[in-house]
Image (cartoon, rainbow, N blue to C red; front, side, top):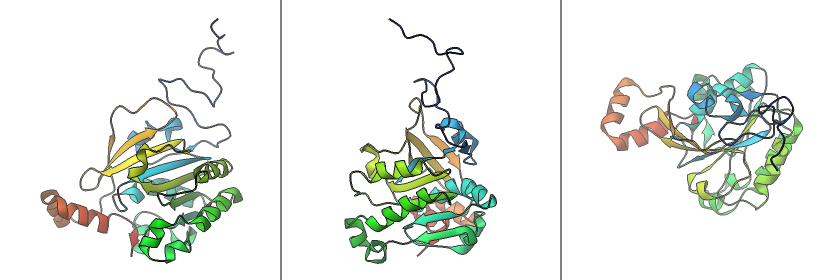
Length: 256
């Protein structure tokens, strides 16, 4: 026997449900979504932007391909609302002038470094940072954040992402987890997963691996805020190796 149509017509579904051929709306209890600053991307994100009260997992081959320029418009908008940011275990020390160029203020940014991150890089790769996972979970539960960014290792306790997703449900803002692209085949508790890759000078390829809606037909090609000088841009277009080095060095607001 077919199920009866929901009251109010076939489109009046519970907000936690969506049709397989349609994008889902904002998650129940969320205060809307946060526009990404890229119209083409917002058109592909459920609700039209970065979700609140949910994890967003960004998978990338290495740091410095443009991930901070992708997130900067939404982060800057939150800071303009007087809401602070917290970054957990970034791969390098944030660069003040580069952050300022992206519209971000150091006065509303807190960087949390785990004990493991203060050791050598091989040790950090071997041992998941339990202390930073605890700090991130507590920060999400505090209700005081605008947005959180966490660079997490490949190896995590089995229930780590589930615990973070539960904590994120009480945080009225976006939560971004930046992890290795090699994890794209592994299941994740994050409701939204994106695969990022460089698509050329000041361009980023964005594939949606998981979302509340149908599979993505083709990856997006986004034009990022330019950071290369005209001579550097010309060299990058002529020499792929120069592009890899120049983009990693100039595009992100991090420096060792």
